[in-house]
Amino acid sequence: MAPYLPPPLLRIMHGLDAHIQLHHAPLATNYCYDEPSMAILSALFLAYMLWKSASGMWTSTTMRSTAHLIGEENNTVLGGLTGIGGIVGGGDKRRGDHASPTFRETVVICGAKDSGKTSLLHRLCNMKEMDSDGSSWDPPMTVTSLTANAGFICPWEDITNGDNNGKIGGTMTIRIIDYPGHQSLLSQLTTLLIQGAMTRLIFVLDATEPVTEGAALLYQYILTHAQVRQSWSKAGKTLVILVVCTKCDVNGAKNYKRMKIQLRTELDRLRKVDMAISDGSNGTNGGANHVDDNTKILLHVMGKSVDLDNLGSDVPVSLHFVESGYGKDITAIHEFVLNGVLPSIK
Image (cartoon, rainbow, N blue to C red; front, top):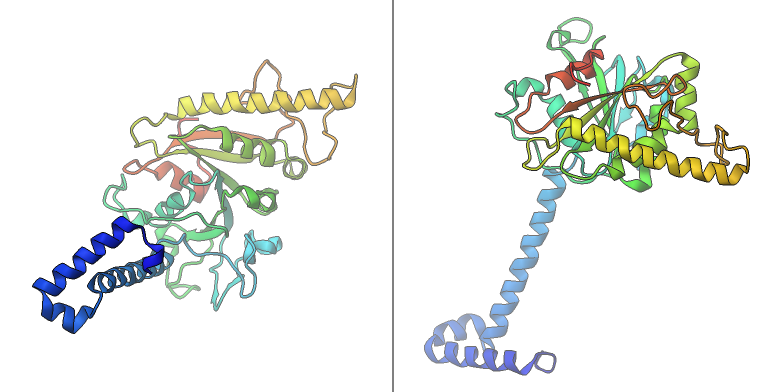
């Protein structure tokens, strides 16, 4: 290796070899032989590689996001969720060798990546193990996932010794789907957001970061998406969205009121861009409802800016805001998931 090493390093290695052979002859003779410095460097390098391998194995087994919904040979983002027909009131989809419990309704959690979706799923699924403020429970570390995760929650009294033989899965059980926020996977999100595939939605925003990415997701895949809006309008129902502002316990985080203002501003900016594009492409027909690709319906407002409390009669969506964070009570979010009860603050 000498031709590939810089001269200063070679001098240090030669000096180290001479020192060890002079003062620690038994060590050099029995373990390091003619080049003690190379033996030491090789041992350190091998130890580093072993440590990295062990660290990677530990991460893969303990820091993964919850229960990936992947089929036996299906590694798509939705995995076993691609069969929408059995979601509401169903639940015999297979995950490997285990059957999912039956469930009454499906609640979807979505939002930008790293916004706290999976941590919120863990907290909701471990409510019985926490104090009311969550201070006695440490959330697991999670990593960015490329597949959807699922959890099941139900009132404690729904776990009985009746027809379910004491197992979770009764008439009150709710399935929660945590959808990844990676930009390349968002095209499949609308499969879960159409009416009939899910009951209500939790939209997660990171209170410590700008709302730009989250606002773009909300705008493109919910508020202006033709398939989502038309499915709820035809059913005569409203898509109820609980906007959860996570990490509000972190210093410098914004409260829900500030997040609401920033979200409104960003949505209004996106709306004006779409309106300008529509005006340019339609000539004098500036009031057109649809853009050219037929996948988006423009978001019209009655006033000068978007009103998040009243998006208009043609937008079957209602938004409600709540804060979350480590040490904060999430009972309001839990009640929304179980029963659709909205929090006292909007």
